[in-house]
Length: 109
Length: 109
DNA sequence: AATAACTATCGTAATATTGCGATATACTTA
DNA sequence: TAAGTATATCGCAATATTACGATAGTTATT
Image (cartoon, rainbow over all chains, first blue to last red; front, side, top):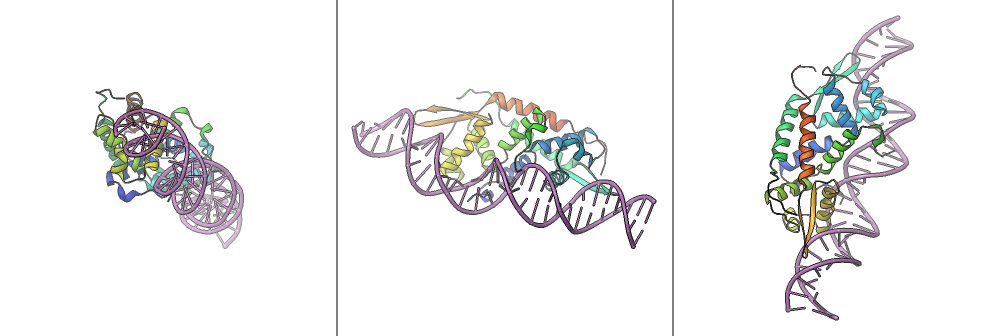
């Protein structure tokens, strides 16, 4: 008990859910917004700006990275993160498809 | 500790995160897909189709409902759920804005 | 009124997430 | 090589999520 039964769902359902999950925290939304805003990649700036501990920021970055939403490259002593364009495009497509599949035409409840 | 610090984020960030969170489970994606597919609302059909216990389905429906994504009306002995068009539109707009704010023009990392 | 059918809620166990201090690791510079 | 800077990881505590059996509540049918 207490464990998501991924095996009973389709790959599409699991994929969508995992992408949503990666973005299901305000700190991670904030991080993504910040990365998008300053097109050029940032890193430890986030710690000062978001008001969360360094360990916490690092953990959120790790989650975004393992979901594939961002990528990081070591740049000297710091790490430069940026959006992963490939996954971002995929996200736009799948999400657009999913949300667009509802045509709010017929009233129901 | 162990509690999301919503107060340090913007309303927009918290809103997006909460909507994502509501959809961050394959069962809830499946439920939404099923509701969208059979335009007319369903209910206990989900229990038989998804392979999760009735209590579990009910819990997921409650989460989708409290996030505003779906709405339910009592129809005799059963409950009829359907998409909440207002929130769905809002979701489409906000998400489109958010995802579209990234223009994958300049290479970075 | 009694029974059946459907859904919601309660209680509980297992697992996951969130946040942070402390520490480890990696690179740079003096 | 030593010190400094930046990031990742470990370990832990608090809280949240997931799943389900049991049970309660509600409406329909007999």
